[in-house]
Amino acid sequence: MKLVKRSLALVAVMSAITLGLPLSAANDQSAPIAYFSEGPPSALQEALTDLPPDARDVVVAKVRLQQPVFFMGGRHCEGCTNDIWFARLKVTEALRGKVEVGQVLDVFLGKRSEGRHYIAVPGSPNRWCREYTVVIYTMEDGIRRLASFPISKTQYDEVSAEALAYQAKRSGSGWCD
Image (cartoon, rainbow, N blue to C red; front, top):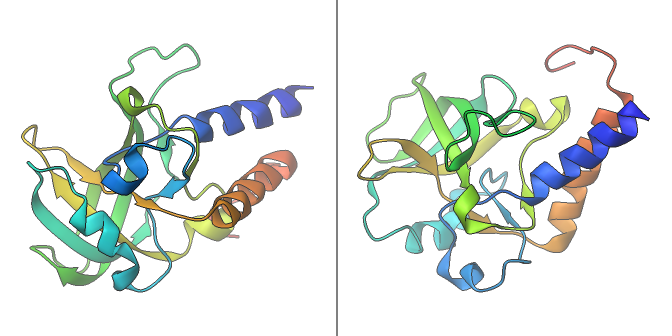
């Protein structure tokens, strides 16, 4: 029963995340989005063109997660901020902007205030160990954030199903098995 509740909680959490929405997806809260692209940098063109107007220090880089994406809120949202997720990324290739290969960056993704329904984040060891292309920017607060981009419902379903399957069989397996 606990496993079912955890799986349902994961689905609810994954469904409630957002950040820096591309304007084309901003009006449709049911349009799935992601922050980590496995495709070529050109796949992130919409994320680049739809950054917030006050975005600065824009970086496009290939990265690897240094730990699983971390949920920024307790069971009852104690200590919550407007940011929902935290990720620590290591740059493997600098494609645009001021960033160095090997640099480790702390970034936030997802804003509670935007109330998205479908967002894909790496949620299993198989996905944690991949290389991704991301768009990173800062705003007036100086915090690094990831830009989102639209994905298909099929892509979202694939990422979500893998994360749920991992949660269902999780038995203390290690990082990047």
